[in-house]
Length: 247
Image 1 (cartoon, helix red, strand yellow):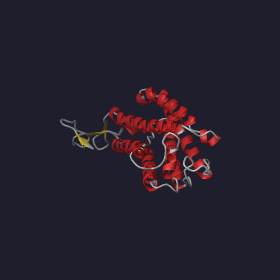
Image 2 (image 1 turned 30 degrees about the vertical axis):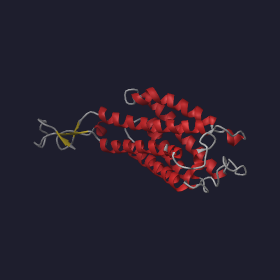
Image 3 (image 1 turned 45 degrees about the vertical axis):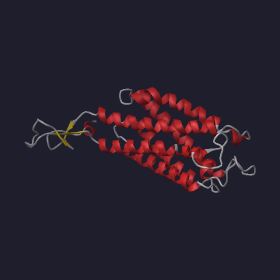
């Protein structure tokens, strides 16, 4: 709540109070998504640590496979990222938006929940290091599939919402489809080991993770911009009402 200088008097005789509804909640969600973007690319630490994995030919999930030396570090970063994504998605929900945007936040929450399950059901070993280790681990493969399904559902829904309400999401409208295309192509290229053709899948997967991090940052940027675009509204005590009540 913020008092304004030379503000008009309300019906109670007190200075009118002007504020942006839910602004603090959306700012916090933006901070959480920005943090998630950094944690989702915590794999960059493998460039400094003796993981024994070749980033060109290994999956990032091999970093927290059950038998890997740095599994606790990378696993905890993944868990922290998933928690931030879920919390950010819940905080960012805006009942005033259309059904595509509202469902998009739930899809993002599903992404976080699936990512959490992905860590809790890790690979038993690293296929790129052990020839006898199977690239397809049933439960881990299922959770990874859910991660991708939720991610692309989220991206598609927000791109549709931005197309139908361009004034409310100009940043996503401009960059969302490009990130969606890049993330989809890079994800498809990573399936080599799953169909018996391993090699060089690590590069497109890491590119995919960078694009997902950019997507989180894009959502955070749009949240902050939406707070800035909201008009100041009068509250009930001063003869003013929140914007949410005007819808």
